[in-house]
Length: 155
Image 1 (cartoon, one colour):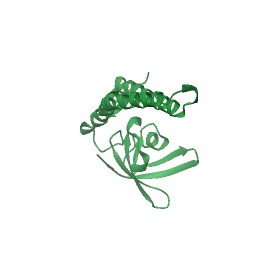
Image 2 (image 1 turned 90 degrees about the vertical axis):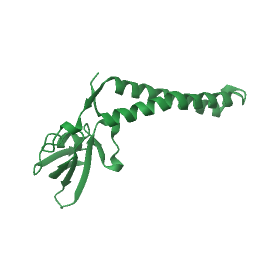
Image 3 (image 1 turned 60 degrees about the vertical axis):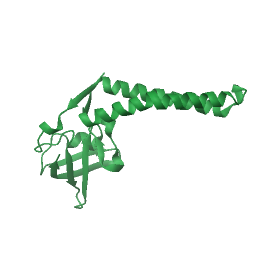
Image 4 (image 1 turned 135 degrees about the horizontal axis):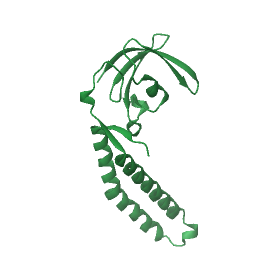
């Protein structure tokens, strides 16, 4: 299994989520199943099927987080500079039309593209890693190619 690069903050967030899912989440899932069973015939009980499906999703997420935590390699963002793009960098880029975009490069477990957090494994994140301010980066994406110029790198 490949290691997962995380900041200490991301590791703590995952550990908190894992604890919540194992305690509160499992209790809630068990209660939903108990209530659904009380409705009678399980072969025609959609509430029971839904409760069991929810429990399976919960257990899958618990397993996923446990594997991420087990494979975690902690990145000390404070010790890394702003000369090159790396996990933890906030990068401002400009496209050919002079539109600016700002992304924070994070490990895949922290990715939240809607809020500007892109994975180091995404096409854009992977392409930006290692580059410096002023570099032009050509990025292969499913819809074609993007070209960005890196205008700023910060923590």
